[in-house]
Length: 272
Image 1 (cartoon, helix red, strand yellow):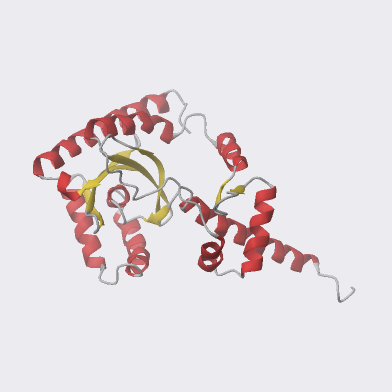
Image 2 (cartoon, one colour):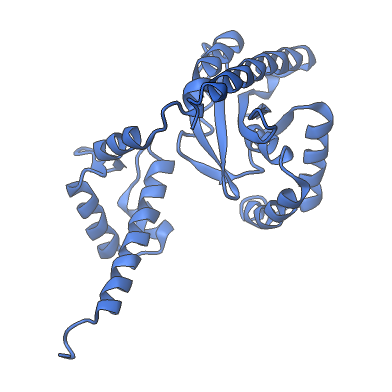
């Protein structure tokens, strides 16, 4: 073999590496799609060299996986990803069933409502609905991954898992959470899980300035396994005792309706 030529194995390894890098960039762009991503943030957060990140981004632009705003130069998800998502969607997705109820909760409470599903150790926001309250809680974007113990929707999901799964996820996620909050401990997480199970709903402090709290409940499939968490995020000052009870009732009504819909759709064989 000519020493200047790459072996098939080397080419395959290089191709796999490029794929991993492209996916890492796509994940970051997805997580910040509302505001867009700067090139400098993308290559620093992925650990890539600037020319390498720029080359991969240009390739994804050519394939319409992402787009770049001509004025701000920020990167956003592209039209091809939307088309591929539509093609990949099941006959009737869980999000499709939940979304009308998220809208109803947002309309009734006036606050921001989120739907979270599990992806490994993470919770992923797959839908949101905004209420009429003038201060919007943009604390979580659709498509963004966070440790499953962060946010009331994710915490509600985590608390509904078997104890063995909770122990495994907690061990990993406490370390991840401590990178942003060094005082966070596994004891705190276990206390939150115990309180969530006792009350039947999760609460979580989302932000300190302004003070934002969230309340979440788990949605279960007919076999009892957790399907999603739905949560309301609002200013802490809006969650006094009476209003907290109202929000929990509203979420509980939505969960009951969603679970009834899930049973009907599964009986018809429409839910995938």
